[in-house]
Length: 74
Image (tube, rainbow, N blue to C red):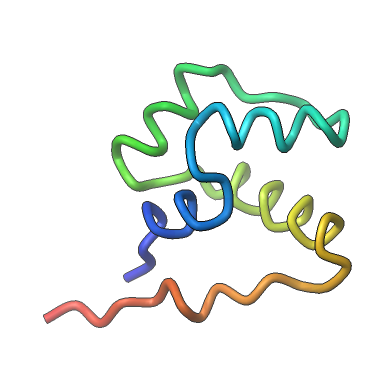
């Protein structure tokens, strides 16, 4: 399983932080309420997850590893 909640918190801190991050790059923005739900549910739609990874890569100048967010389900 993938721990999307931790991914969101580590990389963006809050829903406002995520929207601000995307806005800084002139990206298309998801609705504020949708982003709040991502944080509440600990899930990001696949299309948006790819967008987030791409902008994180631009921001950091290197691909972003997601290995730390994999969890073994008992």
